[in-house]
Length: 363
Ligand SMILES: *Cc1c(COP(=O)(O)O)cnc(C)c1O
Image 1 (cartoon, rainbow, N blue to C red):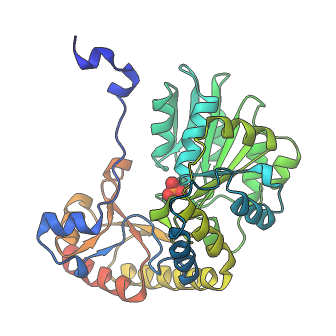
Image 2 (cartoon, rainbow, N blue to C red):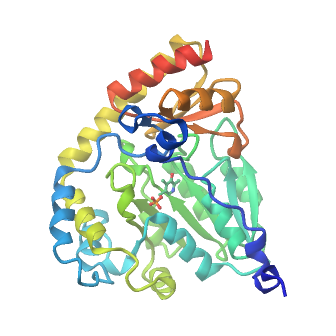
């Protein structure tokens, strides 16, 4: 008997997520000095984690022999206070990606449908496929989610609708007003998954808590991987109704968020000054990069997140040449935008380097 005969057929056709390459990998493959490489490919925080988060992570290592608090008590208390919610409404995740998978476990069965924009974060599609559900992809209009078209894609089989704002990879956002109207018009058999991985970069992130008070099925997702600079530690969370949180917790492994991550996340939340500085630096970086691209005659998509799209023509070629020069960005071909690259905002020095290399490569 062949191994493939034993395997769940869903797995045999499951696409594989392609992450941005780590600096070490690029250095090894191209024979470059890792110290000279900059990675502007995965929307990480160029300013690192808060020094207070690093100190908390170090301290937590001293007790690494103990299992973490499986209920993430302190972290959930802090998050509940931050969002003015009850701790029972917070579900900790091994990155918010894990919450996406938990949503699949809880809500998706073969034959169900999950509605999503395209291009959007590819993990939505991967999760739908993993659980045998059909991804229903709705094209963005002007690089923004078309909420009217998303609403039209809902059928009696729809279980989940994914809405990221700001969206990855386009960096565009929908207004609070239109999101609330969209959510209120959803039929009750649909759960809205509102992915706000980049909410902290917005001056006024949309507030979906009124929907929870109205008893609507909404799950909001946040992460410590972006503004908080803790991508390596894998901490994210969902906030939702106590009922949906309890369901997600049933599917969750007991120790899904490690103790180092919990400690660092708590300390990061307490360092508002650091976060505010990162937001300011990011705004300045977006302006620097927009001006630089404009000077090179390159079209960009104006972004409200910590990354942006730039149209370079042959995206694969420019990506490859930038990488050979030690600048890693993200080619958008997998998102059906072969002429575009996604570039993460770096430090002012990194942004300057990107613009310099881009100038020589695009000509
Ligand atoms: C980065 C990102 C995430 C967060 O992933 P983690 O698993 O928390 O690291 C979620 N959604 C979107 C749209 C993202 O860009």
